[in-house]
Image (tube, rainbow, N blue to C red; front, top):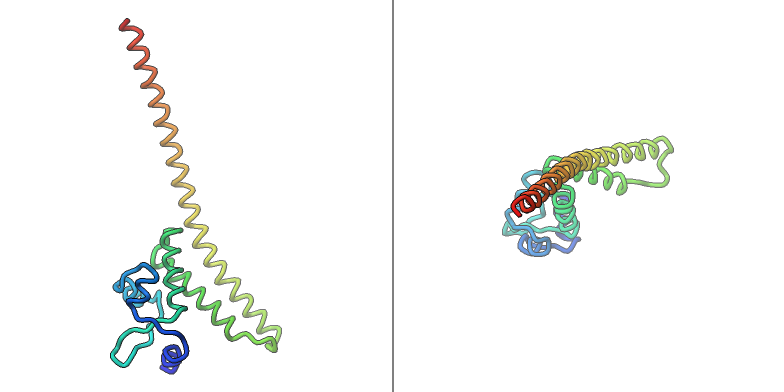
Length: 161
């Protein structure tokens, strides 16, 4: 609870309508992201109004990029977001005076979560490459059919004269 109160007090807070306007998503979408765990539960004003931070705005923008650019599912986006949260937590709690073994462990964890993110994107890109190849094959076939039809039309016109 203290974390939520700190977020509300210390960071510039935006109401749900402001975040919706800035990010181009609906208020319902913001609530949906919260329900699905894509956004952390926001701080609340006394009247129960949701208060979002600039970090929340950045998160919504990241979700939109992952959806629009890569076409990731909500489950894949959640994995990507959770990986970012793990890396952020590791960054936030890093201290140069940590033992070497602890620093190695933290770096290994960052490698693992980044590899998970890379695997998600790689799988999506591979699926897109397969789809692109299939479309290319269809296009080549249609071009052949078109060329054959032009040839038939030319032959029909020549035999008619």
